[in-house]
Length: 404
Image (tube, rainbow, N blue to C red):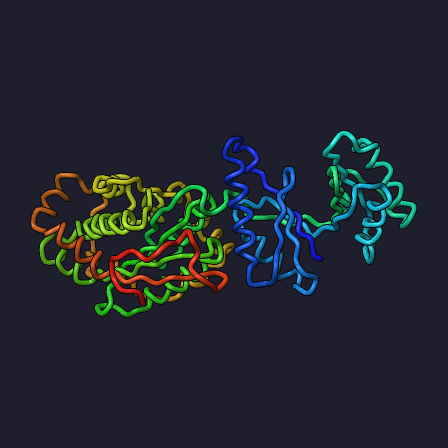
């Protein structure tokens, strides 16, 4: 059997809620690897253990586990009884084929009844390896670190520790609805909310047939990519072109962007409530574009009746782009498209819109009618990773429009 030893960090600080968080982490690990073959997940003190059939390529397992939020780090380990002989045998197997310039042993005794202290165990096992190989000991910067974790009934031996994404398991922090434009920022914002344990519903606004379907295609590709981190997703596609046309006919050009965004927030919030979400998420970064000044962001918050979360608010474009590259969304986001906010865009948008200005402009608009129209005409599409039946967390589709 292939044994994967999973460590967590932030979950350990949750005290009374720790069992709930650990159950969710175990479920997510099982879901992320469900198509690779049978997996057994054991919960031990301070760690989780996954066991797979030896026929499954370790690289495939590592790729899946390495994307599960809540995992601090993980290792491919040998699982043996907690006896000195068994531990030495496992170490001898683990270091076969290695030829480091230096090494150290990092042994941890998790229970007091083991006959040797952690310090004594480090010395004993280090001497054993040195006698077998002649390698030089370096306790500060070793080329090879042999880890030994001794539990009451069994011990885990491994030499490589791979990083996980950290954070909290998806599903422990509720549901949010994320506005996803298809650009660089919004997928990163959604990913960051997943990392905080939220399940994300995606809402994309498009202007087909006034503009091409490129932004819709990008939104679907991004939703498919991000589903690899939360395993089940729903994407709402809201036709916005006709709504924009109504805004253009009834409002001053400098205010159009803010009025578009206020309508988007209202529509997204309506969808969010139908999906049992508790907040709306945007990819806004303070001062990045005209609609993201402090004044204009305030105009958006004024129309919301649930929290608007802005996880990128203090990040600059370079930081956001670096994270987009890390999660794999950057190349999709930079593909040419025609975002709905490019339709009927004024030459000089207002950067410091006042409450009085938007209130006056919206008097001539049928706000409730436009919001109801956007919600009623929205289509939705579901994604699963790995492919399979709809996850229980996703639930049935909201009755807001047809599926596609």
